[in-house]
Image 1 (cartoon, rainbow, N blue to C red):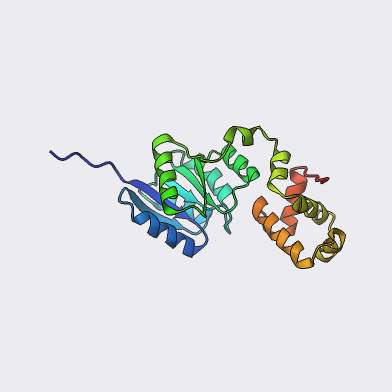
Image 2: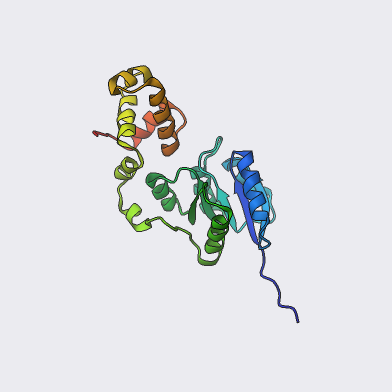
Length: 218
């Protein structure tokens, strides 16, 4: 008598980078215990497809930085609408502030984009079997940090200084003169700050800093 095989773990992949989506899907398709239900290019695309799909995934592999609706908002809506779907955040920027925010939202695991296929599959299996996957992340320590401290730890000293100067409405040229670094270097720091704090414009950064009472003195 044949033993019935375990049901496949149903997966969806959400990433605005089509090449990344194709790579992940190809890597996961090799594993015969996994089934790719569909892919989505941003959070709203994911929610629309979940609404119309008869089958629901067991695990959603979710990028953070995406247009239209980012991973933070998508995760927050998913937790409320589809509490049985487990969320594995798959991102290049796993900073303490972002991790704390996502833990409070209720995601089930994190993995960096640099990780190889076997690590992603391990994370999927751990979440499916045990509910969470937080390898290498001190969850208790991150949750203890207050919000401002968590954000401060996410940024380098130079980035904190540039955030403060951006909030004074200096131009990027003026910031370069004030900090005695090249204009191009200021723009590179700005790009990193936007990625880490998940903002897309200078106005969003200023609003974020005011909303979260961020004042960096060093």
